[in-house]
Length: 204
Length: 163
Image (cartoon, rainbow over all chains, first blue to last red; front, top):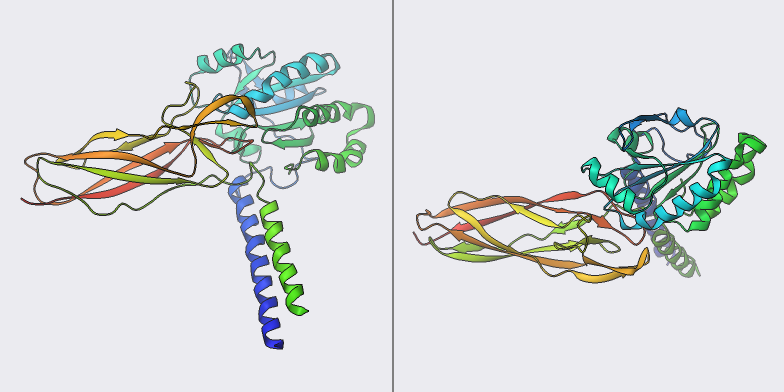
């Protein structure tokens, strides 16, 4: 009887270990070992990038220092991404004067003209940049779309959202990114970290 | 008592494991089932059922998605010497609405689906095994996120008999 109990406990621990290792492998598959942004990205400096925009200009993240940036990875073939885009348009209008810059990063492997046509049809009022493997890797091997990073005025990441979130969640993250100037980044991070975790069940 | 505690732990582990499988956090899987023996006579043809399974919680676009922006599921197969793929027939997609676009129906495959290939041997084909290699290209989503297009290998062999 006692022996059976021990065997049962060992079995339970074995299952627990399998679940834990499965989750670890899953995370490794998602983010890759070489990625720079893995784990909890809040408070980390957003990796610098330089990408071409739809109109052929070179755009760097550092061009927007002093502004809050919503960096949204999307693609024309991503239906959930389409749901968010009108929200981003509204948020750009609502918070643009407060210093919000929405940047769309199109991860399509298609002609620029098709991306531009799609963005135009969606009424996009913010810059759309052409994504590269490098930016995807630098931002933690962005694989599933949509994925958004919320970057404060000092270039620190204050939130990340993966998959389609609710508009309210997105707006709260935007407000958090915008708030950084008023309270200072460190205070903002400490004050809002639990909220960020609550708002983003899949935040890393 | 001990057994009850262990049972509780087991249930907790199972529930915790399932809770961790949030959308957008798993890699989508599409698998190809091995094909049984396919035989064809010189000058004849044979039907090959190619069975695929889309992992639970995921869907992929059908071969005829409702928007040109969506990436269709496509099977590409090369010829194998004197045996060629004469035709491919894709199943119709299921028209499904998803939480991310409740007003829109997408044509998708989920669960199991079968692509039917007809292979034809030339009249001069000699007896032997003729391997077919190809790939199924697809683009998967779950209920809140989409994944880049991927491809899985598709392999089967056709035996030419009777010469």
